[in-house]
Length: 146
Image (cartoon, rainbow, N blue to C red; front, side, top):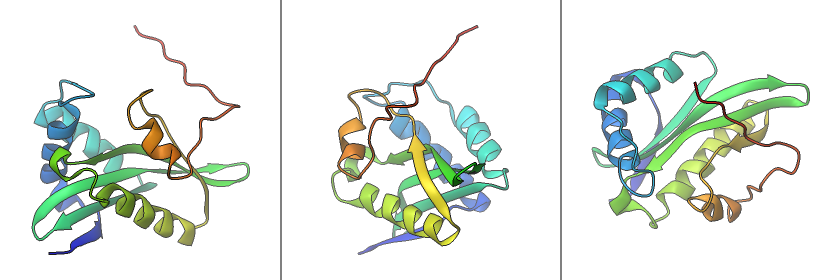
């Protein structure tokens, strides 16, 4: 059965949260998400008017999601990929590439000029590089813990 890509919608938020917890609580991230914290994160992002997200299904089975926000910038509209995950047992089958391609196509239609994201070093960095992403020479990520 072929996989189908759809827009993410609020009625499916619980299955997005379950996938999110499954993927990000596993290696290499080993986070400590609960269903409740994942639902809160996803809902807060989906409630924003600039939200755009895609989901990929095989039949009724959710395989992966990608989402983020459109942001006006001086040189056009930029898009921040906030989260992107594919179920571990479905990785390396092209689903992530299909999701990213579908997202790029929908963003191009609304005038997005740049896509950017934050990812862990040594994790998905090479995967993104093979899909035309590069490490920025102008920008760095800085953090501060309280």
